[in-house]
Every structure is written in structure tokens, then in C-alpha cells.
Image (cartoon, rainbow, N blue to C red; front, side, top):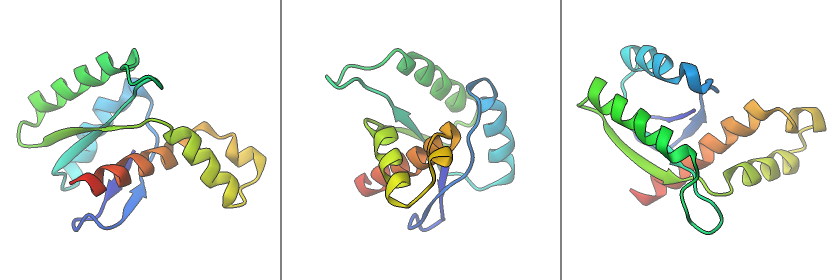
Length: 121
């Protein structure tokens, strides 16, 4: 997960959350922080066709809209963000062990997704 400041200038990695715990994490986070919008990554294959995960993401979005009708939701294509995150880690000089840490790859990918999204609004 990644977040941005109120002016939507800086994107920061927040944490990684197991899928099974995501909704409960959001409940706690939204009760403690000012949240205006949730942007979901939209995973697609190289040919542009949705992956099998999209169904679950759409279900989560539906749950969020039901629980927090005041919050906006949107989607951002997340194609190649893991590859880009790994490249960033390599170029930044991270050692091999850190580059193999999936949670670190996921955090950087979340930052990339939100940065891409903010350039589109």
C-alpha cells in the first residue's frame, strides 16, 4: 500500500498487507486517517486482458463502496510495476537479499501505481 499527502505531491510506501487482512486493515486505517479515495491496482496481462485477480479486486471495491459510500474509488493499470520496482531496487544499490524481499517489491510497486495515477488526475 502507498499513500499521498493532502496536496497529492509526495507518494510514500505505507506497508504490505496480506490479502485476507486487507479489508480489516482498511477499516482501521480509514477510521484513523483522512482518506478521500482508494485507488486499486488493475492487473492485466501483456495483451491487455484482465488477470484472474480483477474479480477479487472488483469485489473488494464493492465492499469498500458499501462500507464507505463517501469515499471515491478508482483503478490504475499496474502493468510492469513489479519489474520496474526491481529495476529501481537494483539501480539504488540494494543488496541481493533485499531485492528478493517480495514485501519491498510490493511497497515500491504500490508507490509506482499511485504515482502513475496522480499524473492522470
